[in-house]
Length: 172
Image (cartoon, rainbow, N blue to C red; front, side):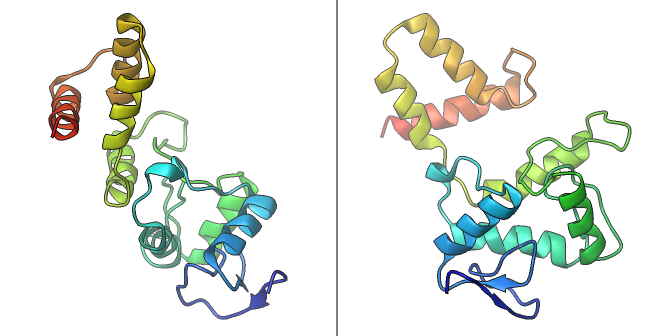
């Protein structure tokens, strides 16, 4: 029910990632994690496999590498990982990993992005931009921001390839 039951650590999309509470449905569980821990699914409207995403993030915490979902820091066990996430307010899914000194961790960032890519489809978002925004300069700026993975204000070859692929897929 809405109160949640205590259960052992086995995966279920109805099981909270941060405590032992279990709910009757995934939405109740997500509402609990939002209220208790500020956890949410980023860009949920583009998430194509919510149970799969929840399993992947659960496995990242519960099994090796016992990694924080936000900063990608690795721990010896799931309990230490959860304590870190709750203490640092990292109970959310991140897209850019940081080193302990606060610098960007490129390999860790790639790891986080690779974790998420199988569970999302952003192709519809490019159609949204092209249909809703009328001013050409605004449209281009929005697309550049969307595909600018490294946030440098320019599209490199890989980012441009992603834009081109999305444009081709949207044109069919």
